[in-house]
Amino acid sequence: MLNNILMASDFSKHAHYALQRATTLARQNKASLHFVHILNNSWMANFTQFPINEMQQALFAEKRKPNNNYLIY
Image 1 (cartoon, rainbow, N blue to C red):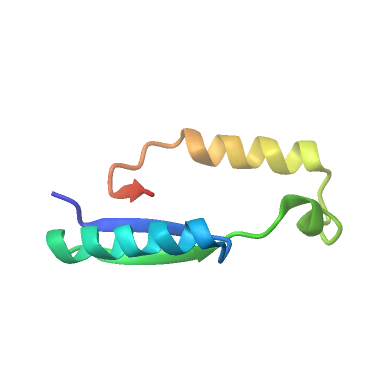
Image 2: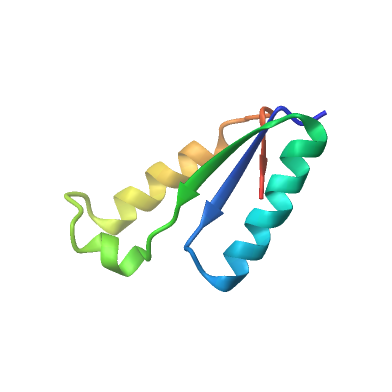
């Protein structure tokens, strides 16, 4: 049974369809729906204090951590 659903969106047309599906899944499973706004990496890189390689390493390290509480949609 799903308890949490994480919905990432860039507010595109396709993301709208994914949001509709994620909402349906959340209702069917009585799950919490968490929404994350995704930004374009090239835009974000201009404002970061870390080199991109360092950021990527940190991101990959975080992704490697086991997390069975979320369905990433």
